[in-house]
Image: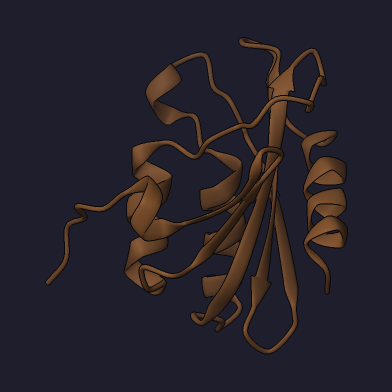
Length: 126
């Protein structure tokens, strides 16, 4: 699967977001090492701390299906459905990625491909 195809799946997932409080819809498409794709969208809540990001939804869906080895994730998002600007993952999502992915894990955004090491060089671990 190409980076562009993965990004298009993330964009499609963002259209399913439940973002009635922020109007900032995010979609993620997670590629497993065996070629499967799991998508996720952000799901907001009136109590903001209970909101779940698209990246974590995709990762948790994959893990709940027995997948724990990932190759890349594409993330798109923006206010009012505008996905032209990069939508960087938050620290919580980066930390969840680090639970399953090495520092070279590819994070595909609209401004290019980044690595987990680049976006979160200091992570919690065992």
